[in-house]
Image: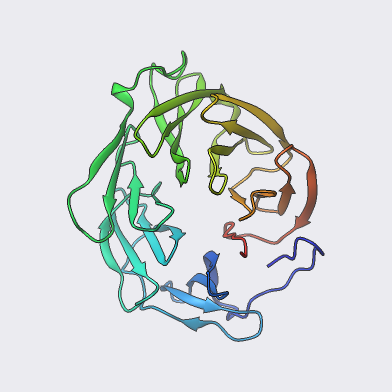
Length: 292
């Protein structure tokens, strides 16, 4: 963990053979860690700087997963192409419940619904309580208004982003990139964001309780960070970072954006000014979250 005001780093207490795959600060002040032990088993833990990590759940059933946390729900999204994913209710973390979702999945802000793309061209949503079947939220083949260079062969790239402003997907075509958003009222907006050759890695994050979207696309050596005003249909470049960005996270007050790379955390204000760069050792991914 990093104290943004002072730059002081502190580590939570986990065994040397364990790895934290994802993390989140909860409303009650506790810290959630999705932890893989030395035998490859993955569980939800309560982690702390002062106390040893305490397991909260049984292991996730076998599989290769990406993790998403929203409200009291944890999603372990399948990356094996078959959509065999699982959800965990932290209020009663006794078992992981099966849910169909794929590797690019994300939870709704209230933690009740999951969105994912089974084929890179369609986005479907489904309720975590198992009521009703999946519903189609976006179909690229039927979408009008994609920019030239995207419309010829559109594919959803990177993880979906879901916030109060809606559901967002970064779409790559033969030569161009675009962001497609589905607002809470179902309306769809599309904004071009540059050449598809400008990146192989992508990240997006909604401003809390807002309609602005931060976007990063990265090469092997650098990243471009943008701010996109979805209702206005325009964006601006916040800056360049000389490292590939793995994740973007807004502070709860929306006044600082955290760009996480394999080597550092870069804090930037919404106007594009760099506030601080903190070197970190993150050889196994970038699980990050803000305290409230």
